[in-house]
Length: 155
Image (cartoon, rainbow, N blue to C red):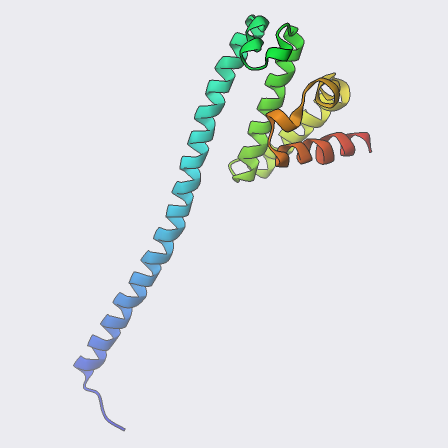
């Protein structure tokens, strides 16, 4: 077996340390990039939600403006407009949970709020009869409301 001088062993250890450090840096930088990507998506979603919030405030104050979104529903009551607003707020919370922005405790609070609103309020009547969820909400949110909120609320 060949003997390696101490200087060569130290150089080999240094090179191994540098390579290991690069792998660690690469691992954590990739993980951070994923986190930044989620943060950017969340910021975009929050910006869109702020725009919907502003629009909803205008529609609650002036329900006749609904005809800009749907000609067939031009004379909406403030309750109907507010029902859409509540549903969009629930959809936003649902999407924030999908992106893992809401903690378990925050999400549990939202779940309770939604289940209570659907069980004790009239929002479920709007969801089932007046609102056409397939036109206004994504399929994942529709399934969530139908299976996790309405069905479990009745159970």
